[in-house]
Length: 126
Image 1 (cartoon, rainbow, N blue to C red):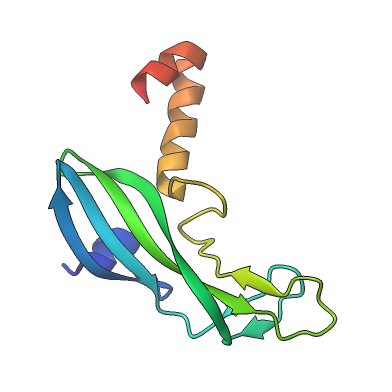
Image 2: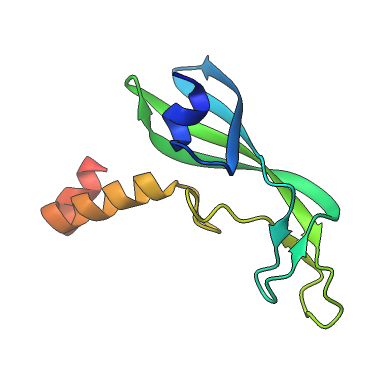
């Protein structure tokens, strides 16, 4: 089974570039397969690249090892002259929430544990 399907199902948004184990952690290097992205303000599609940066996002454990996604995120220029946002980063709302350091799957597990165990007990388990 390919890494892409294992990690993201049949997603056409993200692509696994490489995976390695380092210091007991699994690092999975990921990039976007999208040709461009929509501006979060005006929803205008842009493929004019500004720059890129790297995000480190925690995912569910794999084979008993802590798993991190190393995500290559691109920034684009907004092509709408009337939009107040000139530069924006691409979004991966299917798998990763903006401004979070965990995937949606991890966030869902945390919420489930918190609702089942309550405050302090849930914190100790997580």
